[in-house]
Length: 269
Image (cartoon, rainbow, N blue to C red; front, side, top):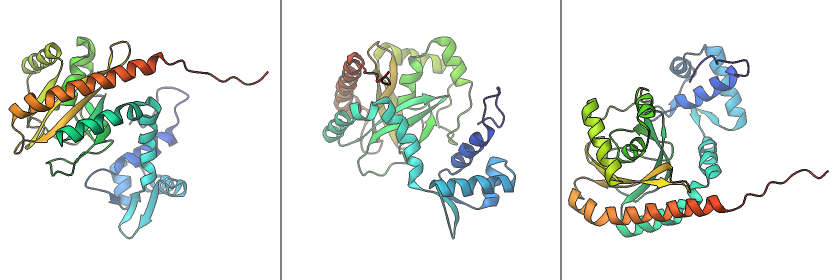
């Protein structure tokens, strides 16, 4: 997050507040004032004022372990999902897919060179990486990310992948440009993507695009499995057809939603 904006309307105090919230990540759910100041590069008095403001607003609490976020922070992310209507449209389809595959299902969108999970229906299975709404991974080694990257124009793809990941994760698969381009061409041609332990050991998944009424790819949806339990053959022969059907149903609902007239209320004259 930029410490200083590029225009007169940039509010540095707001940027600093969001930076403090983002400092609480996996592995450091509780931090002291000094740790927050160090993680954000802020002076201790500035960090303290921000934390106390966030505490008064209900986004931070103070305990014996230090400062921690409260569940109210989830409202910030949920507001985005609700504003797009994505969860309301996708949820029943995702729940049906999970019931049929007995595997977790997620939806993600691009944020720079990362994917960010925006919807998820999970089953209680132990996997190598914890996933929840807001989790981010490098896009390229994930099935969800491959689908989204394959939909980008060539110049935009290069700009996106030039951005460093903010996931804090180093994936197992580190392709060169030729390998990357070959992989994305195949995804583009067949309309779905597979990842087989490329992000991390034990994670195997297949993903498909979600489109709006114009045919534009707006998100991707996957079925995620444990590699030790589900061979690639089963993933492709049993789960992939169900996933593609689900992606088509959700995309059709998106298209229908786009055709619904949106009423705009105006103030009475």
